Length: 110
Image (cartoon, rainbow, N blue to C red; front, side, top):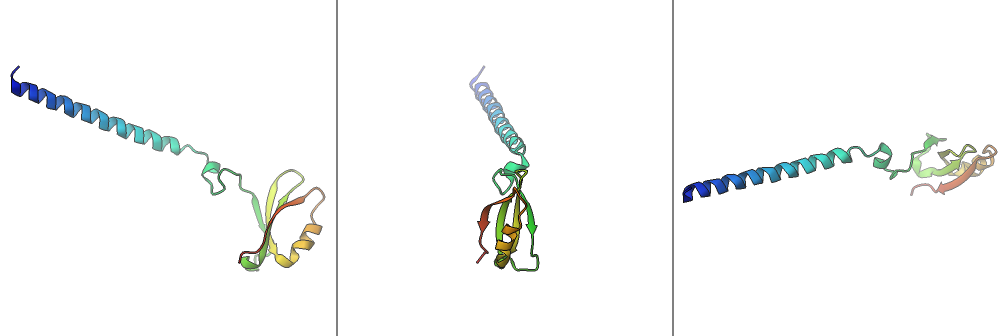
């Protein structure tokens, strides 16, 4: 083998190695995208994996800035979010069915 053949062989080997490295990188990227798409919808939600709860708007005619949010745990251990006018909170709490309880409140948005 003369010097020209050795140089040509080296170039061919380098090209093959480069193509293999690029193929591996593309494969790794494709696998990472595929595995990230298998994340459950709950984990992708804005609630960071916390299951969403039913929301009941008790006063759709009232602006959101005048509503208080109550989180109620029902007697069956399910949760529900209620949006109601701030002046109706006390009456709503007093009228909750036996076994239901308020576990969180949020004042009206300013």
